Image 1 (cartoon, rainbow, N blue to C red):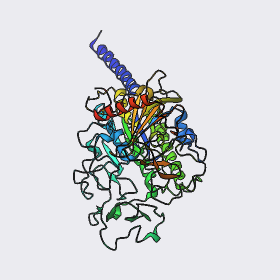
Image 2: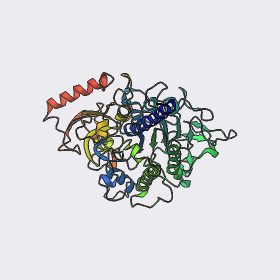
Image 3: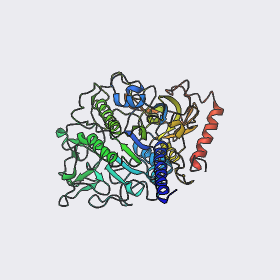
Image 4: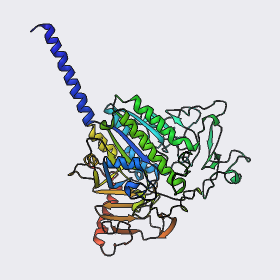
Length: 517
């Protein structure tokens, strides 16, 4: 055999090997898109039983993949759930993980292992687009007119395009990578906790100018006819309209997907819908009979459709695992008079569950949870218990990245359950918290659910129509298989079960981790 022929055969062999390796990589290591809704309840989608509105794009996602009936977030408010999703650690283990104020410093410090940093080790391009609400900058907080670091880029993301806090808190500007885009140096941005001047317009002094009135707590600086939590001045060229947020998230997400269509990528699409102030784009206003809250659900459904259409257009559906979830359960009046409560009608935002945002009842953390990977995840419904906190360990497993023993200490590998494998196991237990470190926990083990309150007899219980201060004992026990709405406290009938769960919960909290070393 001549040297020339041997060289040609060698080249052909290399090409075949390269082809099959790339096919295997595409099969075994998909792209990942995590779509996180904000304040969406278990019953807010038509594929989860809603009848007062329709969500065809999310329904289609569910019809092409696995819809979970025991899918959870780890906390019933936004900052702790987002912290837990990214780090794989329960937020109650770290101080300062409650709802972040406008000038909060970076909560996740550089060097912390995150879902993004783990995927980067496997060669992924990583991005977060949308709501951040995990703080920016060093210990003194962000300097809005200079580089905003540390932030997402210091914990594993290659790029970001953010709403820096949450939109009922100032400032109403975007953050792209380390800076506020379009910021005029001659009009510096100032953010603070105190009124900057006596004549500064607020929701109290200029209430008659508001296009959306406040009901409680959202009455400081006015922007776009809506008053917010906190104060800010300047940065006028950088400010956005509330109505344009969803379009911007879709635009930037599609840019990222198109730029990385030939590479493995991870996109965290962190929507602000349906969080207050609910101000959907004009083309969605009035699309439902549920007011702006319902219209925001329809807007989010459109966003999902645009992302899925992009995957189809780029032939990436069979190479991309999509996870749809929410950061906590529903709330109606959360500080603005947007008629969500008055127009609720027969809609059951939490589905069959009690509670919602801020609550350790099931409605606070049991939310829609859908996975789709065309050609790899079968179509069906799963009752396996999975949680957003598990995505870090599960994605690491799927891409065969070693998980350090001291990282993601509460994240479990439930990848086979996410893939819809019939013999797969989900979680066998889950700790649910409300906000920050207040000491209120729900603890589900199998069909048993223990509630541990902080010792006070009055606790906020969010039900669909109002926020009530309901007297409850320090401990309650429910059997979810027969009482999913947590109406019958059976702790007196099953004291031995209660004691076992109390002891196990206390141990898991005190030992600082729940994932075995």
